Length: 402
Length: 98
Image (cartoon, rainbow over all chains, first blue to last red; front, side, top):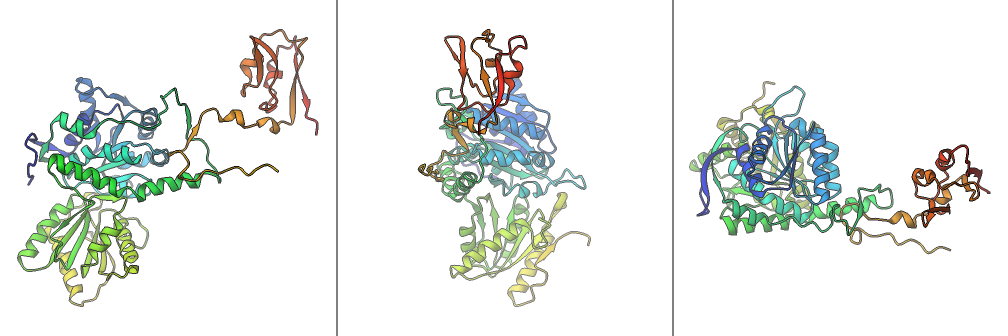
C-alpha cells in the first residue's frame, strides 16, 4: 500500500517498466542508447515513444547490441551528455567489458536494470544473478522492492551518479515488478526536473577550449593510482547517497536509507534480503510479531557501495540471521549477499561487537516462487537455532527439488 | 644525472584517466629509430606527399614548403621514402649511426 506524501503528486496505476520510463522522461537525459531485452524492453520502448512523440528532447540511439549500447553511452557521457540506458540479464552480460570502462573513466551513466536469470538454461524470469555478477564493476547498485521505489530511485539516480562521478544502476525484479501493475505516486515533471538539476561535468570531450585525451594506456606507473581513485570514490559514496535521499525526503516526503529496517528495534531473529521478495517476507514478520516472535527484516537498498559498517552494527543486536540470496555465486562457500554480510560482521567483530549466528538461503532462481510458507520455514529454523538447536548446513537452497 | 620524474599521486591526478592534450610534443620518439630518412632539398619538388603521409607529423613545413625532418619525433618508419615519387627520390633511408 502506497502512502502519498506529496500534495502535487499524482497517484496512477503503472508497471515497474512504465514508471522507470516515466522517470527517464522527467529527467530528460541528453542521450539514451539502448537495445531491447526481456523484461527490460518496455523501458526503452516506451521511452523511444516519448522521443517520437516529441515529449522529451533526448537523442535516442537505436544500436545493434548491448555492447554497442553501453559503448554509445560511454561516448555520449564522455562528450558531456547526461546519458541513460536500460537492460537486463544477457544484455548486461554483453555489456560486461564496457561496464568496467564506464566506471574506470568515471562516467556518471544511469542504467535501469531489470533483474533476470542468466543463461543457461535460458530463462526470462526474475533473479538477481545478472547484477550480482556486476557487483565488482565499480558501479553504484541500488535495488528496489516495488514500482514506487524503482521510480523514486530513478529520480535520485542522476544526482548520485553525477556528484560521485560513478555510473549507477537502478534495479527491480524482472516481471514481478517490471510487468506488474501497482499504485504509484508520480511526481510533477517540473519538480523532478528541478530535483535532478543540470549535468555540469568539470571536463567533457566536446569542450574544444580544453582538449584532453580520455582512456589512454596506463601501465605499471599509473593504473593503480586510477583504480585507487575509483575505490576511494566508492569508499566515500555513502554520505552522498544519503544526502540525496535526505533531500528527496525533504522535497517529496518519502524516506530512503541504505537499507530499510523492518521491526528491527527489538528483533532477535531476522532476514537480510534484497528486492521484491522483501514484501512477502514482511507479511510473515507481521504474522510472527502478532504471535510474539521477535522477528525482523533488513532490506538492502544500496548494495554497492556495501553498507558494511552500518549493517554489522544493526545485525550485532540479533541472535540469528538468515541472509536471503536471489542469486548464487557458485563459489562453494555461499552466495553474494551472504559473503558480504558475514565479511561485514567479521570486520565488526574485530571492533568488539557480538556476532549473531548467520545462515544463507539461495531462493527464487529463474523466477521460482517464494511464498509465505517458505519464509515461515526460514524463521522457524532461526527460532530453533536461537533456542540452542544445531545450525545444520550454513548454505541452504529453498523450494528446489533436490 | 636527470632529475627523477615526479609521479602524480591519486589525489593529484585528474579523475578518470584524463591526459592533457598535446603531450606527444614533449615525448621524444626519435630515439626509437634504427634507420633515418634523409631529405634532399635539391631533388624535392614540393609535392607534399611525404608531409601528408607522415604518421608522426615529422615533416617540417615552413611557409608552405618542406624544409626538413623533425628527428626528435621521426621514428624512422620509412613511409615518406616510399611515398616520395620514384622519379624524384628526394628522401632516402640510411642506417642510424651507432
